[in-house]
Image (cartoon, rainbow, N blue to C red; front, side):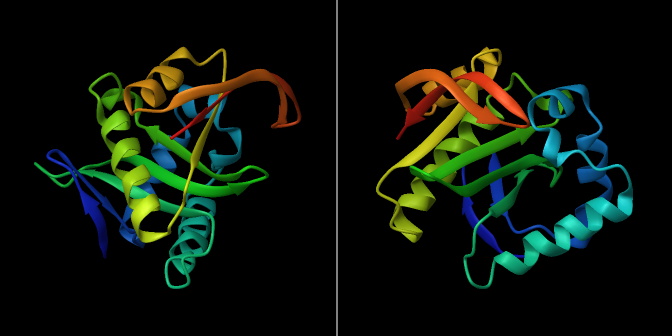
Length: 168
């Protein structure tokens, strides 16, 4: 398991199959079901297959690049942070388990991943795309140093949503 970067409280690392159960459990939480429905797994096998796919992306740095967010103090997997291709360039994504939200972990992970993307992948700009009905996620991006670039309707998850687009 390789670490891509660390912060005072977190380690961003490659997933392993040992993460299957927690990834499956986090995918069942209400916030993830509502905000990222394509990351909800109906079975543990589906979660394991997804992790296998994501792990295969690391060697070639092929998108999507999704890394575990692990708390350094006890090694607990808190969620994930990711980079994916969108029309504008590279988008950051993130999710932290409900029991660990509101403690600054997402902001810390987004900041670290953004810095890593700019250095390791030479990304000139990283985008954050958030539905306006998710003010907590908007705050994460703002606290991580992202600036609001535009707002408006944007397609996604089978519909069109009022969305904020941020850049760093």
